[in-house]
Image (tube, rainbow over all chains, first blue to last red):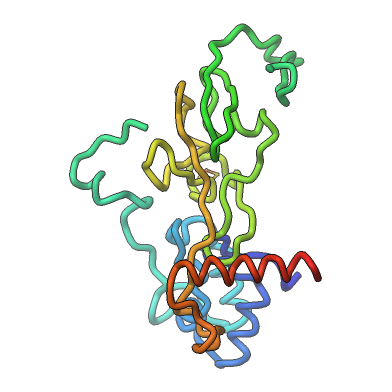
Length: 90
Length: 137
Ligand code: FES
């Protein structure tokens, strides 16, 4: 069970999150920053609910408490070229 | 070539697959064929290829995960443009698709500083030695 990958982009397992929580007596935000769970290429858009739930179970912090682990725009990763007006033709 | 592919050619509800235009593309230097209307990922899957890239740090295999363009697990480099989602991009004739590779992780705190490669060549050598060691074990 501990080997289960929670965040695939950064390859963070349930065990990694548990160990970090235990070792550093960390808050949800700190665990996220230390393990990088939910901070990978997809921007946490895939694993977020799982990360939030695991962190809530471990730390007792509800998502959105005090310092929220908030979602940042944009909706999905885009290149600077796209922002600059290139139309993706591949 | 199509008979070797893994395809549902006669679906109980959708019926038989009709004739489709065949498109040729390459993935990591090998040439494959797919149909018009395939995504890159579905064409590769039909050719028996499930691994689209590796995790940049750990080197573990990655393929289709959500298949709806959400997770970016399937990203490949297409005609030189990186970060293209194979599950969402329609196949085109002559596409050159490449998967990713393991990248150096110079700032990983688990490394012993003296052990760090100082050049890319050294990194590759160390990685090869590491891989050889792994397969012996
Ligand atoms: S498999 Fe999730 S974005 Fe393609």
